[in-house]
Length: 251
Image 1 (cartoon, rainbow, N blue to C red):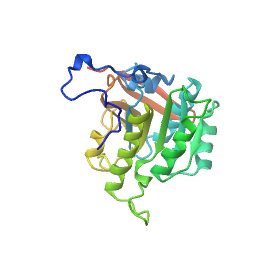
Image 2: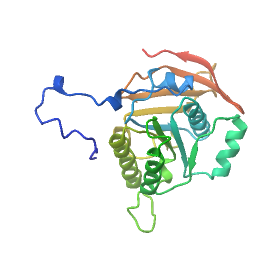
Image 3: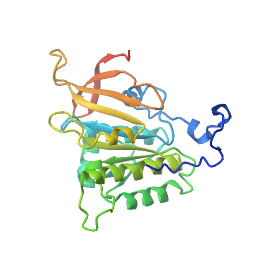
Image 4: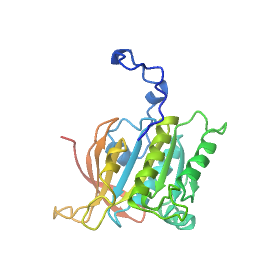
């Protein structure tokens, strides 16, 4: 993976103490959605970071991401929710059920290059130019990187698509959360390489072992290059969204 980060000013062999972190990367921002902020360590999103958000079928991945988008928008972050899996009308129906009022930008693109071009156009408008920018993609398995003229999607398609999104984050100090699927056995739907291509991996599961917490949703971050993994949280999920029931602090 070739990350398009402007590091030309740092000569090979430079002392690490002489390397200056760009000011853009230091402008961390919170979402205001306490459940998710806690999951990624409580210090907020670091500009340029990419994330995979996985979850079992029915765990509530889309519900959580729509709730996050609404909170981010309220906190002043330009947020785009791109649905390649469901129609915009289905997404709007979920927002109405959850009572999400603030609103955020949406898209229905399946081609990665087209999506990033449109996101860039929105990102540099005068109204958005100096604001944090976060793109949510639902989901990785539905995105086409344009490699095949027929639009055929393979396991390699997911890798190439995620590479384009990650490069875009690094180049523009933007953020992206890409929703990924897991198989019935609980394994990640894709190659292990996908985990290494992102800065953060957060997972939403359904408790199956603890009898007292059985059926509750479990949110935990298993990898975070720019912050702590945060707490493991058990939540109930109802028509109005998530509610924390129990928390296990990071060891």
